[in-house]
Image (spheres, rainbow, N blue to C red):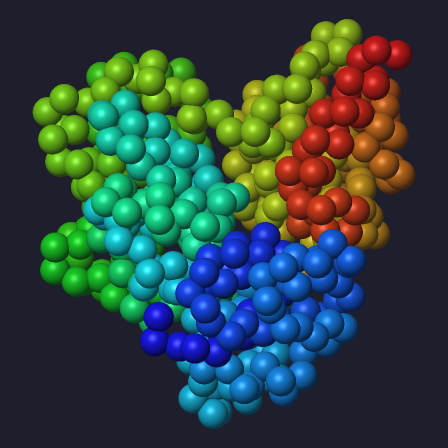
Length: 422
């Protein structure tokens, strides 16, 4: 490790993983957190010998030789801008992990939607082929917590724009960029900045590397590696039969990535039965159950309009949609067509009730607000007719009411249990 003094911004899951890893190297660590820390968090920092500040970021951060912001820390934070002016290196956790780890190959997956499913599929394909991949990153396990585990093994990383924006040397031999739609503009400021952050997944690639992209991104970029237009890929016989188009695209992207990492798969693909379970992820078009003939689907992972539009297109028949949360402000124009075509009624949740009430009024779609998950499901069921589907696909972040999209999905699962037992 070329640095002896490291500042970490934010004590979330990533910050904890960084401290657990870096404290082994005898470094001088400093933690800066914008909020107040809990007594448990202070005990964790004391246990690992970490100095800290809470309730705001001060210039104490600038005494470090390296700054590692947690994902979601705005790049426009004044102290980070000052660090840039002083030429203090700023690396994301993904960049730091990449420099420490020694995997056999790095496969990085980014995109506005579908990243987690594709990562899990790549892992499943490689495991079915006899490999022992480590799947980590934005999918749930911070990359830094898997650097030892990944030694000599394929490392499949889900990488967000937040993680990519502070990369320098990060160079996946196989880079997958699934799609691009407006999102996270509250963080990046402009669509151009968001696109530039995503594009860093390709920035260091060179001859011999592989870039797996759809045609609309290939036309906007100049990848240095071999380019694969994954939507045009042909799957092995029997793979993906009967699956909706958005899942087939995910499966094609994963197949292309696995082939790039393990070319012998082309001659001997694994049995689809070993791969298929990874295609259906929790909180992504997950059938929770039926209540008196009405199916209830949990798509809490749809945190932006692009994902909700895909969900609406994937479900046949009329939909009673549960919509809302902390909205992104832009990008909702792409929802208008699917909303008008598929949605008969909307139940609105979270901070965005007024925002969506105005939008739906212009589209002529009736709606009503709900207080909490159980109230939302009760109202949705009351509005549903035979042949309808009740769909939670919020098109919004969850942080107004929940810890994250998983917590939101779990609360709706629990609410369905209450409803179905009533």
